Image (cartoon, rainbow, N blue to C red; front, top):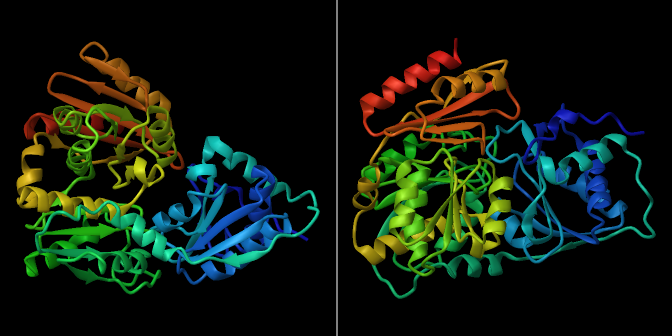
Length: 449
């Protein structure tokens, strides 16, 4: 007899909850059956991270998939980019992971044909309803489980992005935060000559004993910054728990925000594909759009969220996309994000230009950003309308792509509602620090009134 499924674990982009209170083996089994029932697939690539609960949830998930008549191709331990690589040439895939969430969480990422993510408006609701109902058609025959080793192919895929015609010894610090990057990063980088990797927290321990595996928070890259300076390294990169997001610091230990990294990597990639479209999320600095254009690319603004960005990349045939959260997406890597490929491209850049990363990033830091500021608001739609009404006459550009974004002569702001919490998220930028602080305080006063 099935227990009730907690509907709250079905999020906008994945399935995630506290194990076993919100997500247990019974729920995993039902999700496996629901996934196959929805997609009507014959085989499913399945990977797992190294959380303590992952192997048990994998077993239950695989049982559900095979009981519904599909075969499981077990690729074993996987980072998210490794999982995407495994899924790319198959019709469907599921990964047991809760990304950077604390150890008590677990969950599932899901893809359909061609690594297209399943999210809130692309199948998540249907899978939820099937799992909650728990009534499934019986297949003609059960599926089987087969193990498959794809590590060699994965390494080769990442090395395809390395410019092998350039030589310069580089020393880099990589902080994988005890997440899955500690499993995949060394396997790739031991194959790259003349790059010395200083490892930080490579031992995979998804209780995350040293710091949260979320490099978006400054406190989580403090060790990285310190080690870059101590080792006189050329740059550092901080990786999140499932290895799909990354944040870079220069040789001085200074953070380079992901919108500036988007501009830098776009410049690198456009050398081989002039005129290509590059997507940047609407929270990005004005500098990102400007550099893409100056580098011969076509800048295209996109909304926040990997499912939306990947969909737009396919529609626009975009070469590359960057998100302020540290997701960096590559058309030539199955329209998915990769922290390893991002790091390889920075190596290519430093070798090609013979400069320090701070020299490359410095001129791009043209404006002053507030960073993302969250405020608790019950009537999110009402508050956004109030802001739009207040600033409508002054605004030069108004966008409703994601929340509201208003642009003025010397500043802009975006306010977006959280999908899961009573929060409004503010991002604001101006041409001077004084103007940024003045308008940040003015907008926040309205939001919090």
